Amino acid sequence: MLKFLFSLFLSVCVSSLFAQGMGEGRMALGARIDTLIKYKLPEGSNVGISVYDLTESKTLYAYQADKLSRPASTMKLLTTITALSLPEADEPFRTEVWYKGNIEQDTLRGDLYIIGGFDPEFSEEALDSLVGAVARLPFSVLQGKVYGDVSAKDSLYWGSGWLWDDTPDAFQPYLSPLMLEKGVVTVVATPGVSGDSARLALHPLSSYYTLTNRTQSRTPAAGRFRVSRDWLTNGNNLIVTGNVSSKQMGTVNIYSSQDFFMHTFAERLQARGIAGTFPYAFGEWRADSTAHRVAVYETPVQDVLKQALKESDNLSAEAMLWRVGRQTTGGRHITAKDGLDAICNLIEKLGYDPDRYRLADGCGLSHYDYVSPDLLVAFLRFAYSRTDVFQKLYKALPIAGVDGTLKYRMPRGTRGYGNVHAKTGTYTGISCLAGYLRAANGHLIAFAIMNQNTLSGREARAFQDAVCGAVIGE
Image (cartoon, rainbow, N blue to C red; front, side):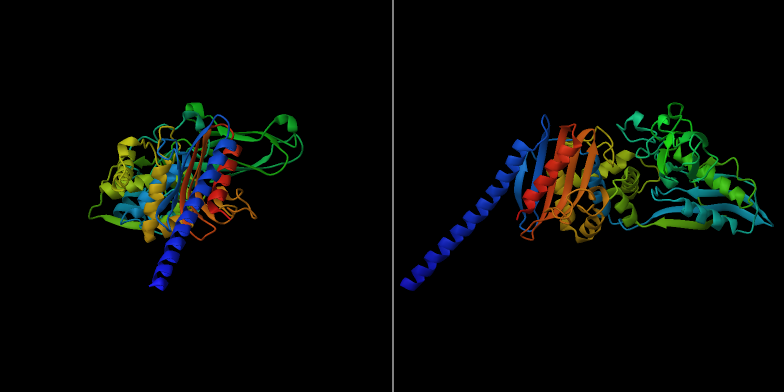
């Protein structure tokens, strides 16, 4: 009997000490983050934080976790997790070429169609592969038209709340189901003799745009190297200015990406000896008994996901939003709302009220987006609960100190190095970080840190890195 009572006493003591230790651990983490908020949060700013232990299924820390904040590019987490959760998640992005009509001798008596599939990674090489497939057909004259089918999307080429004066920057593309090199031209400048114009190489080459070279080689007085265009009039005359003392590179978006695509496609068909390709037009593809598919180009979803998350590519995220809209509605003609409705449906499925948030786009460029740290963590928790979703998402997230937008943060020697896999979100006044980290005890943690009203991105990033270090622990 005494032996039994002694064993019971030891059991109660051990259990009590274990529970006390766990409580102290949580309190210690809370105290560490509270101290960081008090002393390291950028002056005049605020923050919302949510930290959840996925291994033990419990909240570790919350500070203003339900506070609405602008997510910037952490909005891409909601878009991509929704996209990955759909049954058609693994379907590649497709761009197709078809013709209708008959080939008689060396003439196609009919029309050629290129059907856009929102592929944000469609490159110049991809375009040339489709042009080559057409050129191999047994005709050299087109007695009809070359049509681009962009009917899957409405005519709104920018997302709601996107800033008009962000153009002609490459990060603000003109959205279309047909995108060539993201609707962006890259200019590489190489210096020549001092005072002379620099040599310019452009990619992709196309007569759709023109070029004005106002550079000066090895002339500091010429000012900073800059690539722009006559964007206030929606013009596509590329204007390159400034000093070029060493090799320089700049990028600029092109107005009307669908026209850029079709003009270049038709131009390259003509260069391959096919007459009758101009003028091109836009029209909706409808198959009939004379329809023949010529070629298809596919981009794997994981490639797009990697660009959207590791490189924070806005076009890739928006392409996934429109794809979500098409997959969930099954419609031929969709809008951004169709994709956003699908995200809202998942919000509701996770037990949250979608009316408490504001979703305006799929990439976070919009200043109309408002979500909370709790909601971001809810999506991260959901992704973790679905192995098929989590494996693809985790692989595509930037890794602290290693790659993507976290390559130069939490470097080797810090607690976060290699342990933090997370999405950044940044524009003026906003700095966010949300994703997963591996704590020192081996637990996998989901977290969201949303800094708002901070004009010092450097200070906000330092605060986030310190919070991650505190969560990781010794």
